[in-house]
Length: 261
Image (cartoon, rainbow, N blue to C red; front, side):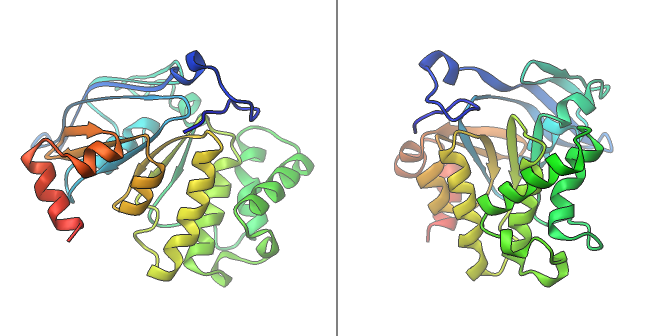
């Protein structure tokens, strides 16, 4: 996949190797009993699209939620674009300014219009003037294909449209990396493709992305690397061709047999 820098120019080989996410030996327990992350390490480079797959309860969503401190962790280290996110949650605000996230549920403010939802964070967090935020929000809504819905409220939109608003809202903060936590799992089947199309376009633009998803077609077409998690561990990782065509681990083979039948 061709890599681009933040201005849209083709990046050099060295630039594309820059590490944006460096997670090392991350461990997390729930209630000191359930060891949900058992020393997990992952490095994601600038412009790379990493798809995380695995069975329910494998720790995949918990893992990516540690990247912006939505989930605390107890041991290990996480660094986002050079900013260290320590277990004591220091630098949380600095990290969250660099990380956009799209969830299963859309989490839009129902009393604000689509345009206002996208404008809110840049004005309140980055201190933009409303005119600038409005212009950028309009450009992003056009990018995700719903500028014509800008003055409607979230409740007037379909699920797929609301998720596209959520993507535009995350992009409005101009993040260095985008996290997607099963963004299509709450959608009706006919709405899934419109959200995946936006994600494909975003990946092609050079955005660094980590996506938890079971959408096999998307993973095959867009991912640079697939990471398979089970029981709080990374069991296997590789290119889509390697992962789907020649899985090495029995646990991976078992998982693929279930989702590819």
